[in-house]
Amino acid sequence: MTIILTGGLMGTLMWFNVWFIIWPAQKVVIASAEQVASGGQAIADAASRGARAGMASRTNTLFSIPMLFCMGAAGHYMEILPAGELPNLMMYWILTLVVAGIVEITGAFSGAGKPFQKHLASVKGVITAGFVLTAITVVLMKTVI
Image (cartoon, rainbow, N blue to C red; front, side, top):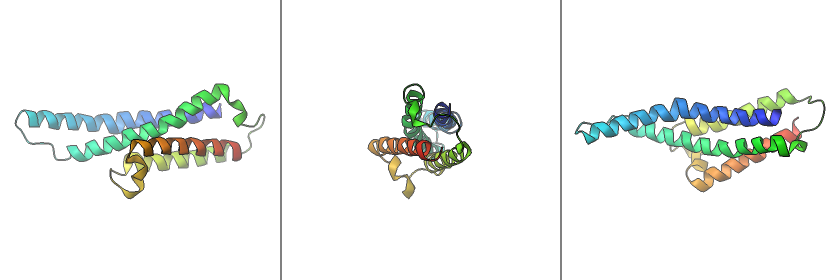
């Protein structure tokens, strides 16, 4: 159950990014493009909102790798968790929420082009960071719980 809930956490963060960051920003970018096409002025913050939406989209790609791992592991890799009592489950969730929160804040909320977003600057970096986040998730499951 913990594995699938961890994947659900990642999926929920991805849903949040789409509905509350990416889609509202894309509405502004589209409205700006329509204004420019009809001879008007561009919306001033369209470029910055588009860049932030791009960072949130890359964060979603990063989250998709551990989310898919957790979905598959829930049915096929159950020995990742010990059987029986899970005494440190609360500590696992605290650490998992902290790690996921750091990824979310640095990727989707800090604005584009920050120095600590180097992992989001390229497709290779995003995919590598996704696998690193998956490894961190597995290590937390195997050591903390």
